[in-house]
Length: 218
Image (cartoon, rainbow, N blue to C red; front, side, top):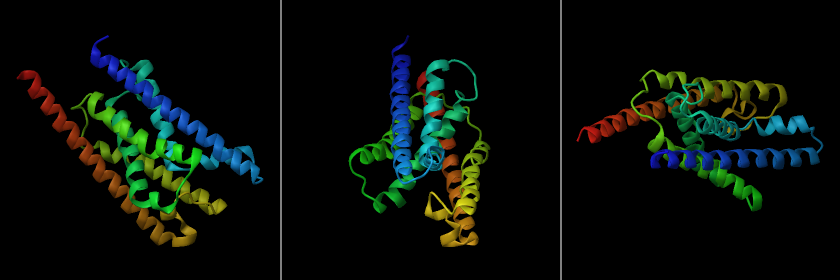
């Protein structure tokens, strides 16, 4: 296997292992605490999976695993458009956590390790992987609109589940605290941010494609 191919596969294994391990340990740790407080096992798992960070890292783990196992196949999980969408989502995870959430708590011990893995390590490693190894030049300008489906469904789930249980994973969508108008406005701004960053990602994809094409011809 070419040297670049080996490095790509090694990167995929490393990222997948970190993501799988961090997600699984987080689910076990959080669920254990909720069960100790009298909640059911199923509630604990569902509650932990209700966080965008956990869901996105799980999606990242699935996609990187699929790319490692079937990287040469043209499947939904291995296409550049899917890998690029994951790059957008995990970048937003790191960005929002750094700008809005990091200062709100100070985890220690295992929680600190998991916090770093899920919010810092996987975003940085996966974005680097995307820049270096995901084929460039295939992304269309219309794709960022389609990429909004995932965060839109997530916010809809949060609001619906919150209406039924009173639990909201993130304060920006907390209808109890903010009311529906403010929560929906926050959602609109969030989706706009996803779209803008998605357009930037497509622009970077095209610039890198031109740069690599020029380097090949030189």
